[in-house]
Image (tube, rainbow, N blue to C red; front, top):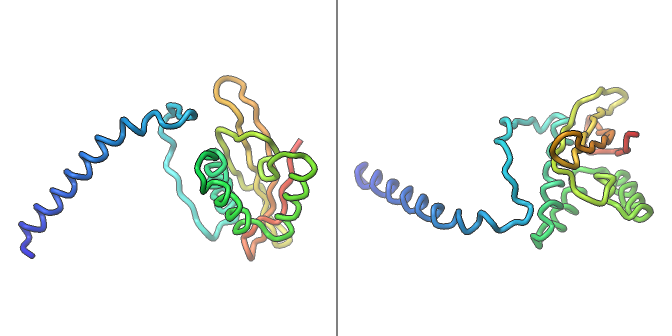
Length: 165
């Protein structure tokens, strides 16, 4: 294939994709009742070897899944995330909390936060500890809760979660 033909083909594909997005975007703009304008987030990065990054990845993906609860795949995805990121013992502890409290055992709540943040707080005895901060509303004086998360340094799985008072 000649270079000119290839260039024309790529340009045509780019124009078609742009036109498709231009046509679809207005239709998608109002599809969710939870759609709100937010400032562009700071760039994200991660490292799969870091237990703190894995806790952040888990909470980000988990909150995304339960936020989009009208998506039929959301429940299965949240369950799969728990299975992948939590140790068997942590999964049992979460299930026991949920049965007793009738609330989500990952978030220690019945609703879904609008923001989350994960900070490394220390390590020792083969474990790392992170502090997850969940923000429940926007505006001045939002409600915030915190969760202490312990991860195994070897497997990087979450081994314990506890609400911080």
